[in-house]
Amino acid sequence: MIKIITPLICLTILASCRNGDIKINEQKGEITSSIGVDNSDKDYAKEIAKLEKEEAKRLKELAQNSTSLKFDKVKHDFGNVKPETDCITQFRVFNTGDKPLIIEDVSASCGCTTPIKPEAPIPPGKSDVIEVKFHSNPGQLNEILKTVTVTANTIERVHKVEIRAFVKE
Image (cartoon, rainbow, N blue to C red; front, side, top):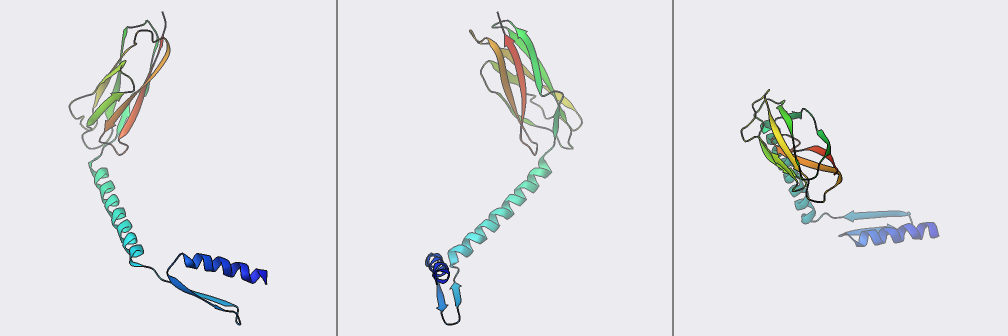
């Protein structure tokens, strides 16, 4: 008897959360339900489908207007440096795609690191440099790791390169 009552209670609880009817025929041991779908569910499904279609269109346009890039290196180690001295390196960036590469932004993770981006678009098959200057702050000693973030018109819009220095007196 408990094997019959427990599922019936569970179904009653579940059904009470929805608009619909549950009919129980104890003689035949059948349970039937008619759960209705209200219009808000249909509207939600239409909205999701619309958003998915718009996102697919946006991704297609992005792919058509994007290119690709490659760096000659993604890490640079200045080694041991003296406090408060300028250390400069360059990261060569190659346009490996078939559209002009536009470096939109280059930013550093700290004020002691100053990157300079190319201003002109880089034609397909060509390269240019991103210059990075590191100048340790007063009292900044030991190992220093900094990240430079490069934003470009590539499918993966954000790229990262790193610099390292060990500041010692």
